Image 1: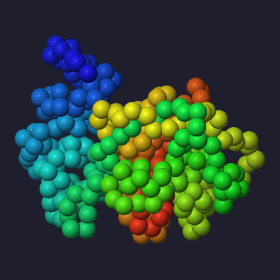
Image 2 (image 1 turned 180 degrees about the vertical axis):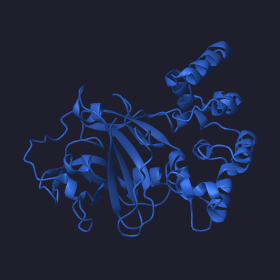
Image 3 (image 1 turned 45 degrees about the vertical axis):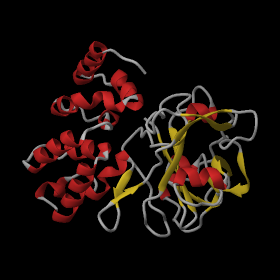
Image 4 (image 1 turned 90 degrees about the horizontal axis):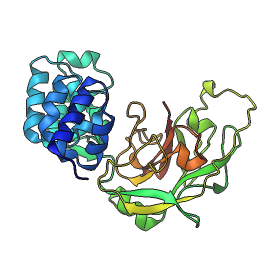
Length: 313
């Protein structure tokens, strides 16, 4: 992506006024271009588009840390955390340990503030990555692909519906995305129940254990499996942030999730640790033009448990 300095400044002005759409597209493909504008954007309160802050420098991160310590809006912590800089990680570690007064009213926990940037603190206070630095577009394919169709002989333990194959990776691909040795991974999902709560499977099959949420109800509405062509791994995306949960063509293997709502990384129901992100499939890519939302796939390679998380606007 090539963009002139004047055009970039206009986009920054638009983002500050109320429309960050164009600037977000730049940030996803060329995050470093926004580095000179991060303080201005933060000072203007542009906090509802966290992708804008991914290319932050250590110097800017240090200034935002100084401001938070001096009593500025704690919401700056989320912008810092998205950057994932060493300065941000150290600040989150310190705030998690010291628990300054503002943490009492902080939305969520400071230790999990990095989820928007694809990381969290490990048990030793270091950075634990929750997403891959490698990302591939998921595109329609004539073969079975790695997303779409059903999981053989697998059904929902709550409603009995056949499970949809959200993502299936062979051992080589799973190892690449997880960044560690792995066997094959199959992420199954009930398109009914999984639209209302995090949905857990093991090798594509329903996991017994988590209680059935009462709010799922027992109505007999007709639900259909997504019918769009299967998706396969396509070309590598230019950055881990280039997926788009809002539209067709945004489905992505690897990279970091493009959350429609707040970050919602699931915890493994067996060990309690935050699960690693594998990829996202948009509603349009899975089920056609009028489908909404996005399904996000996660996996815990130690416990062998996978999760599907759904969000929509």
